[in-house]
Image 1 (cartoon, rainbow, N blue to C red):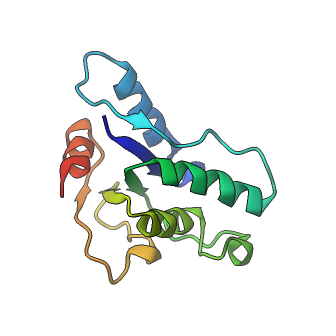
Image 2: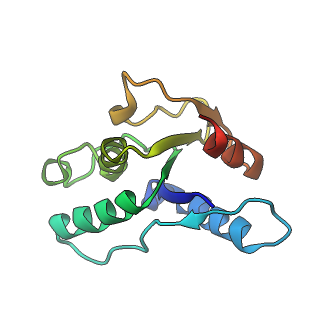
Image 3: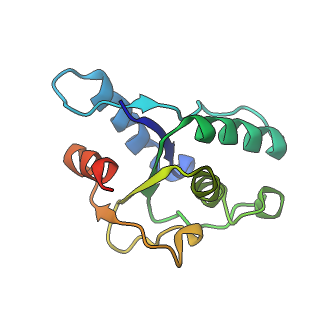
Length: 139
């Protein structure tokens, strides 16, 4: 079973993360994964949040990036994070750790996170069980 860290915009796209969990829990779906995404980290300490996310990313073999409309929105703490937002931080950490990057764009007009620019990653547009499974299988 793949060890997957899911990178997503918590404020706008958390319902897709919840759907992944529901598919995994439902025996009627073929989709199964070992979810290494942390629960919401209840801290205002950016360093603590970065450490928690990095620890989970290091345990994962794959990072599934769910790209919605706000994937490149500037976070209020972007300077402290060191990246435009948490998705870009997670993507860069995942690349640095050698995780396989799997990308689902929620619609065709959603721009990939800045940290993926200049890189050649395959992605699928449209969130469905079939598409998520396909993008996680792609080499």
